[in-house]
Length: 98
Figure 1 (cartoon, rainbow, N blue to C red):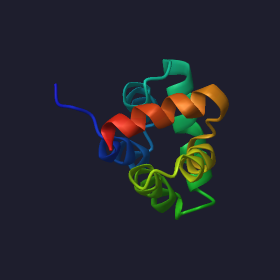
Figure 2: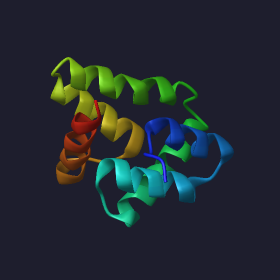
Figure 3: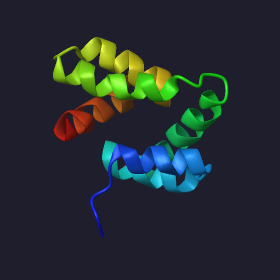
Figure 4: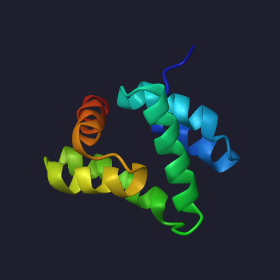
């Protein structure tokens, strides 16, 4: 099996397959399946009203690479509704991928 990427997540979301998108987030963000699925569903529903949400999601990596954890955490919350320990866990997992 190939290594999953955020591109795979984006493709699943664009297909409307939030189950697969949730599984991908579970692996990428090192969170539980329930959290991954909830985050994917949140992203998908928010995307309907904010078509630029993919741009915000891509900005997370830029903030991480610039060492700007607070803006990255704010974007993680905006895009995936993850905050607190879940948001920090996602940030740490994304940092490994950046």
